[in-house]
Image 1 (spheres, rainbow, N blue to C red):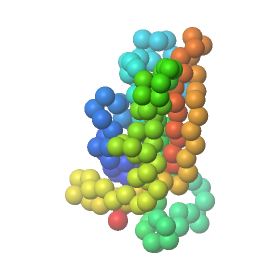
Image 2: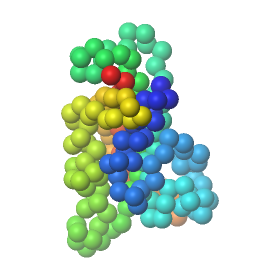
Image 3: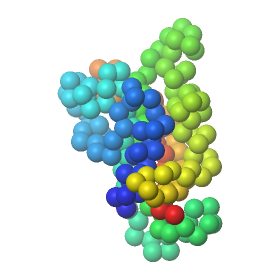
Length: 158
């Protein structure tokens, strides 16, 4: 499981620009943290990606990537946060960068609609998107908001 997680983090780091912080350890992002701590963890402006393992006790699963019979498939939640910025035009707003994250050059949704094969430490890892949801979340009580994408990604070593 840890190798699959590390391969997913490595792939995400290769997809996102260097201005993004990609990690598998999320100490306080799900809690309202003091602003300096939150900025240190999530960046300023917020451009943050975290990966969490999704345990399953169902022995019937996983069934393989798109029926290809690749076992085992470990599931991970990928959380993507981008600071919300309102503006008069689309080009000046955070929506332009957010659309790039979803469908453009980063294109997480575009890429994970299909199966991704990533080389990590001499091994091939197969990744595919299982589900996705997105929304706008409050980062704190001060009125700071963030675009948020939650992806469930299946990863296996082929």
